[in-house]
Image (cartoon, rainbow, N blue to C red; front, side, top):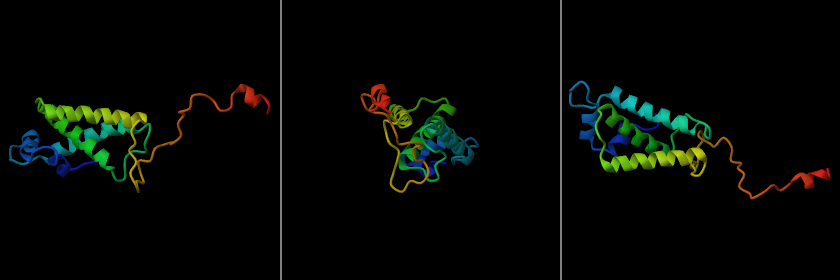
Length: 140
């Protein structure tokens, strides 16, 4: 998993996490519920980033941990059919925007010493035209 309970707790009060995930009523967050929310978030990340990056990440980059945590919290709210707070909705929107930019290559996920998660290819076409067109190649 790209994030854990502590990552969720860093973004949402523990009381809220318990309220969203305590299905058995024992006053504690249910591990299975938390794990399922994180797994769903990770699956969304993998689906979006797979065309560009080698996923599953051996060690999740910080940005992937953050995206996973925000999207997992969204899943917890959705399963309770509760409206998430506006600041969380803004964070979810920003996370999906960043995820899209990572997927299309306009944002970079790389961190120093990152072994897994390297871009599939660093080559891109950014020039205005071809260096070698039909006329230049005709001589060969």
